[in-house]
Length: 470
Image (cartoon, rainbow, N blue to C red):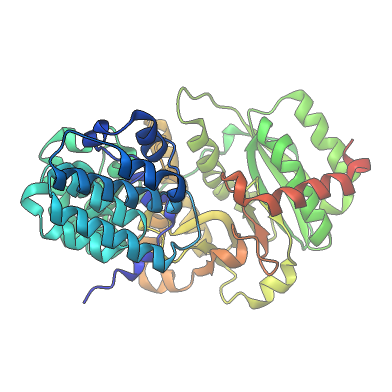
């Protein structure tokens, strides 16, 4: 029996994508303010809302009215899973499932059925969601959100043949996919894993360009590297991110690894003010041997994709320019651990990449931590990564997950022996979003509620080294 273990490990944000919005027009029969609290504002206050919902009157037959109210109660409880990295409580999950089952026994109209699938998937009751879909395929054959959920589950479980069946259904009607970028990512990655080379939305053909040579002329060196035996932390970002996050990251490196790390800033669209500030930082923190490069480009869309991926395309040139090991870090991370201690435990030092168990194929590898001591394997790998990114950016394909797809697919193109030589370092160990004291670095997360520890450490670093950066 399939336990959907990989799907259950998947980050909650993927479940949120296809479950945060529920289409339930039948709820319009209830008072508008109650519906808004539950469906729009995602209230979790079951105590305050349950009695009001049960007391509301509708013109529906008794069984349909009760089914609607049961679903609304289930949604209130399930709202607690949204944007919450913590596992949904087992006892609550059982209650939600019971409410959904009872509602469908009373009135199994299509909207209720689709909402039930979404509710169960939201709280990570994957078996129950798949059971509902499988037993109602004819009813759900044109239900786009149910098909997208099923496709995501197929990809997480690496069942690419079944994924292809779902893709055929989705692509039979262009309205089913719409402009949903995540679904397009799922489709092209599934086709790639089945042996294809998609060439639209994101072009996979640059992966086959083994003769690719990176264009180094686009890079301007403002402070050349100091060649010593230390590892260099490579930090790529734009001007705004440099001041907001890059400087605190530098402070965290100085605080923990000043004897082990140099720092290199690769700045997008740098200017004279920033260049002068980097020089000041170099003088204030001589132990870090700060260097600085820049590239200039314009983009009319998806600047975040450019910022996230161009640093990876820079790596072939960086491997030529720096003589020692390189360590790529996210500009908004904070280093809290010792690099020498971490390196002592790495099994693969020629190339090691942050890896997340339970992530879909296109997000298994993260640029939040990439360590390399150079060598032919690293050069071969990053040449393919750069070819993929440069080719797609030049074609206007600055699409969601471009850099991470480049990391995953370029690794997939290596031989089996080469793949085994690449270290997969657990994300929680090297770039932790849970802020463990044992991690090497802490990752920035968008949810301000859960990043207090990161913010407090960042503030403390600024205060500690205020005299050096002002």
